[in-house]
Image (cartoon, rainbow, N blue to C red; front, side):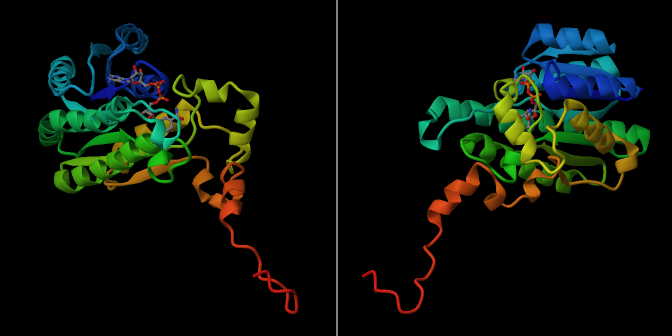
Length: 273
Ligand code: NAI
């Protein structure tokens, strides 16, 4: 049986990904700092849970080793643990910026580094590439207001993914999924407000928010042998919302108007200066 370790597997996108992968026959190892949540997901999917803070290299190393002991061949890794925040750039404190970076970027790095030896070994035994999927965000590609440190961290996750893909081919494929707005506990405060939800849906060509199932399906594809030639890619899974220009965005549009130069005066009109 193929074994896959999912960080951030106790909640939201990670928990749904665990369920999806278990239904497809993977032995799923749920890693999260939330012990109760990780245990509940592991019980529900017939998997194994380990508690770890992804930002701590020693905990990453020991949870990967424990996962390998539980599953045998580690054929997949999904780095989904992440945190964000929303406020003006200049209001972020040093410790908030540090935490966002450590969980999203260092956390991803820790698991890539700890897992690669096991993924290479499994590739050698199975005779086909093993795979990693990192979870970044549409914010890492097109940041929106208030997400500065998170957007920077997710852009770093995309770059880290591409570096690992280059270094580890052909044994290990490494790809990234960058979701748009997906309703989960991370952003429930926004999604549960009907006005905000409608405005988010209205600016998405697919006319709805993403679901954890949408993301889990793409993660499963990226892990599968069907994606055997896919590596170093970032799939933006946003219902088409990044196709909209900033001018069409109901939030950013009015702001951009403020910077538009005034139209030229018609010929013959009095000189304003
Ligand atoms: P969530 O808050 O429901 O789940 C995140 C999980 O990560 C939680 O179980 C939490 O305990 C775990 N976690 C956080 N810090 C940790 C740490 N230091 N060590 C171990 N576990 C830790 O969030 P959601 O929405 O499911 O997000 C999952 C990933 O998807 C994150 O990386 C997030 O940035 C990304 N994402 C989410 C979007 C959304 O709209 N929900 C959009 C784009 C990206």
